[in-house]
Length: 478
Image 1 (cartoon, helix red, strand yellow):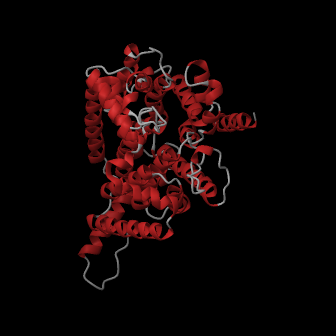
Image 2 (image 1 turned 135 degrees about the horizontal axis):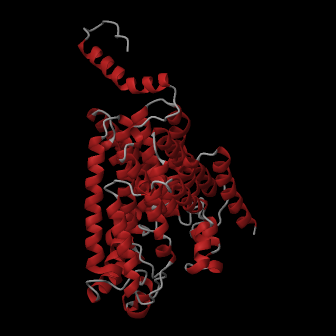
Image 3 (image 1 turned 180 degrees about the horizontal axis):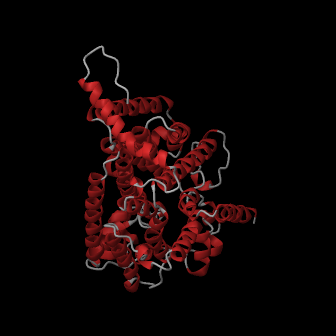
């Protein structure tokens, strides 16, 4: 009961602050801050279940998801006189709607024909993608969301480090390893989920540092997040999270709005850093080294996932066009495909999102997934090319990188369309596409708005003067 009271108090404080400050735009940062608190969702799984009313209540015990619901309600109320604002003119809306529709329709031909909690909450996620951009109107709103990501990552990183090194707040017994170690999960349900969140947020912190330089957001939030986030990522012991971070970091550097030579240098420094880190891990030994060493085992590193992939492949061969239906993978394994599993296998839940979609939706769902990937990639490219400012390009690049990392890691740990941060990033991407990152807040003084608008021009003039000036001459004033 104390856990329940604490979570409800956190939700009340967040929502109360929004009401008191009369700033509904703060709801979106509240979503980002609240989503990592999955503790009570896990603790109440046996009592409230996964579906029905109990499952819905259990879902809203997550402060971030409660803030999502509040965002939808507030956006609908604000746009009641102009409901067309709730349908953004964005290239990302059609893919979001289509993939959600295919997943939902898949329940009709599933064995139980009863939607799981992941399907029941899907309409809320889609509605959030429609509603949130109406509350993300200018650059200040974007910067608040970025700050929320960095603050949340910093907090969960401190908890993860405490779990691993001083044994504090270790609340899941299944994460204790035979050698006595503990795979840090902070407030997430699983260490891999924490690693996924840290990977995308560390990429955001790096992009912010590269794009904005020495600003308050960089000095007080982005740099400290990197400092505590890297050891926290190592404390998760997540192989997929580490690979996802390397992928996200490399892509973020490649797409960052900086000089090409600087990108190459950063990539080289990163390679050296990874090499040194692996060397220290080898010298240290222990469970972390054994997990990383397992990457050299080839297909055997998949463990139980190998049998789950084989089972999913057999399901698709038996039901090639429409699959076994949304949410039917575990039930189909138990009823018809246990012959694939060895006696020691412990799970029937698919850990590979591509295989899950193939087995449960067949060629129909896979074709739709291909359309979504192509449409999102094309939309991301267009947004990135259209943005001319450094900050706008950084945000467009980060959204694309974050979506890529989530999809990549879901091939090892599942949780693709039921990952709430996927839909939060879609909503941010829509706002960036609609130009929020280029609009200055209406409340800024005229002098400050003019100074911000003229800053890129002054920087360009200074760079040109530095190039044209003869050697040894003093720099021209900006």
